[in-house]
Image 1: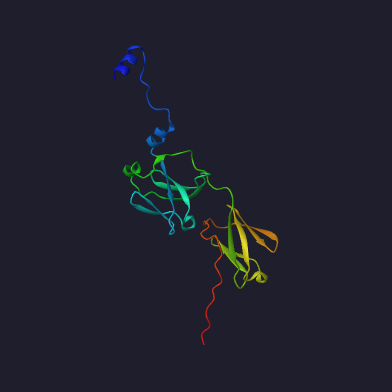
Image 2: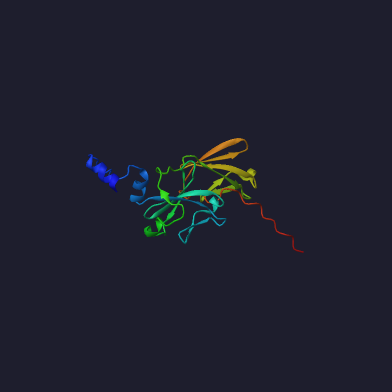
Length: 186
């Protein structure tokens, strides 16, 4: 205490608020944590079990907590993966394990999502709630589809067909289902 008094006597002034962004992030009410997504697609935040997405199972993700929103993001690229409503009250945020001030804003994905689909008996595939007729010659074939915001690019027989996207439904399944086999009944 005597050192501070000596500094003030020599003309020193109080430093004021910290210039570090850490204080600004917590003061603004936005924090982040890292969690591993469980096999069921959930994470635990302060006693609340929150559904992230089954597709993220087993992956280490960052979670940005805002007033009404949880944002799940890739830790390396800070690419936004999913958003969910925030069930965790603000009073509990600073008590979360490994909480830290929020980093720079997240960026949405700009790359198309690549999915696989198996054509039906009549050569139709469905992606994002949109049916696409490939033709009967492609029945039961597995095709790769690149889903962008406005187009669907379908790779069939060493060519790419581009179809306008008519739905805004997000991709829910990435991989194709296996063909179902039924045992014969005598």
